[in-house]
Image 1 (cartoon, rainbow, N blue to C red):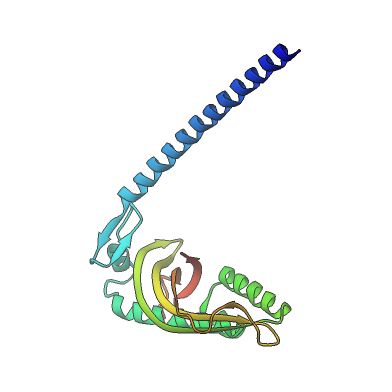
Image 2: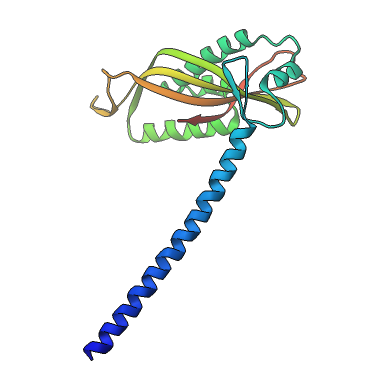
Length: 205
């Protein structure tokens, strides 16, 4: 009985080890493929103007911006993008849906409304102060379906505090400045002469 049990245990141990190595081999292959794909994406990246990184292999942001408008004023656009960034964050913190409707697209508005509704249901208040937007740079630009899209990466210093109905701090620290990095995508219709840029996507780091 004991010899049989020992033999069975050894067989089970060998099977477990074999299974482990098989899984490890599969994971290594998957990781290798992932690294290969990431290397291909990195190789497609192109630097331009010394401050903006492009992640598309089709076109550079500089050329795309020229196609949008041969006289495209990048400095003026980024100045407006910085002001829009701070205005949108403030409207979100203040639960100002009407202001958000003028600045963001339907999908972003839906997400903001959901978060604002959640704060209201929890009877919480968000206090947000953008101390300074230290960096705003274009990292991608392209045309798609008759619209121009420009992707901007922001680096800002923010104080963010969420308080409960009795003014207790639920999240954040009113005495701490936090570095926030966001990547936002703005879009406008190319035939438009107003160049009314709307926020259509957000991503944080």
